Length: 203
Image 1 (tube, rainbow, N blue to C red):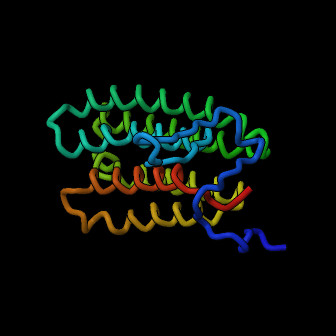
Image 2 (cartoon, one colour; image 1 turned 60 degrees about the horizontal axis):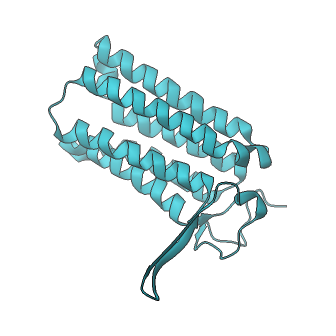
């Protein structure tokens, strides 16, 4: 028996029916103008966690790229937002990981995010220059590890490919010149929104 289910594509449009273990906290969207349907879909708790993190990442990377705000102030703000994101992620996903018996995947993400926040803050407040100039590769690397762990845990090629994308972007970053923060944020946000919008393979 194959580790991955190759009978289904890595990403596909969401089904109209939802597995019973996905119903917990599901959010339905059905936009219409009069009787004309505009957009109809649903977002599971996992999808909602992805969307929430994408909304947190946008101000972080846009501010770092464009606004002349001190690094210490940014570190304080983004640490707070990151902690909020971690708590929200745990609340939204604990039922799903429990049902699929992959709680270690959630623990891995929590550890990776906390480690990243601590290392980023220490580099800013203690002036660790070598880490400061590699913040984008740091977060791309941590995210890729998280996606690899999740992909292996739930047997998802889509998540493995997402991890590979983050890893490859580390090698593309030097060619981004002064746009490293914006490009890093774009890759991370795009990946999260893509995973939230489509059904990915796996458990």
